[in-house]
Image 1 (tube, rainbow, N blue to C red):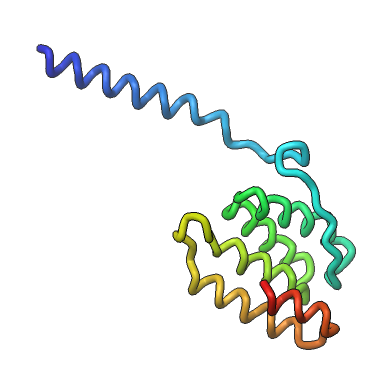
Image 2 (tube, rainbow, N blue to C red):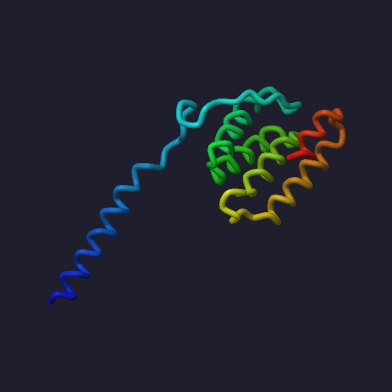
Amino acid sequence: MRLIGCLFLSLSLFVSLAWSDEGHHHALTEDEIGSVHFVTSCAKAAEISFNHAVAMLHSFQYEDSRRAFDAVALQDPTCAMAQWGVAMSHYHGLWHNGDMAAGREAWSRARCLGRNLSAGRKGRIRSR
């Protein structure tokens, strides 16, 4: 009987933890992640989305920032910095658990797209 009571208590604890986490998945606001202004040669229409993606990246929101950079790349397929952002979202330096192969692949796409950029803008992609 004591075992059943312990199992019931454990199950209740895990269920309550699962329910409490449910409400924490929301879009992050500028107040929560801050804001950046990063000048790129990407389409003007993608500028706000790109800057929001960079702010998410700097707030360690790797998966969300990757999705945001992917959306920027869909808005402007020639935006090398969108691929740079995807590459950076795969690098989790503090935790050593990122997908380095996927990051290198995205970085390679950024370098290919960036061939026609100015030397300074190419340097941004190389230095990251």
